[in-house]
Image 1 (cartoon, rainbow, N blue to C red):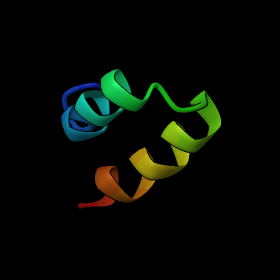
Image 2 (image 1 turned 30 degrees about the horizontal axis):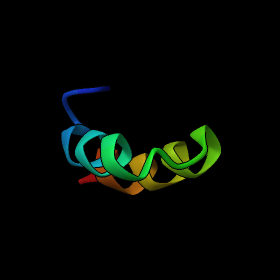
Image 3 (image 1 turned 90 degrees about the vertical axis):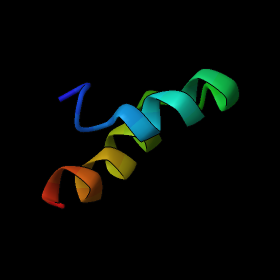
Image 4 (image 1 turned 120 degrees about the vertical axis):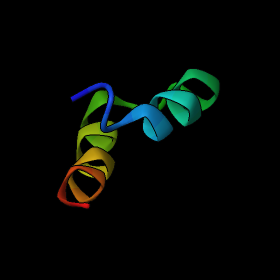
Length: 32
């Protein structure tokens, strides 16, 4: 899952948004 959300991890490392928003943003990434 982390590999699929490698882009979200980069943005999260800088913005450090809530886990809920992260999961939601990761959902579309996983589909692709």
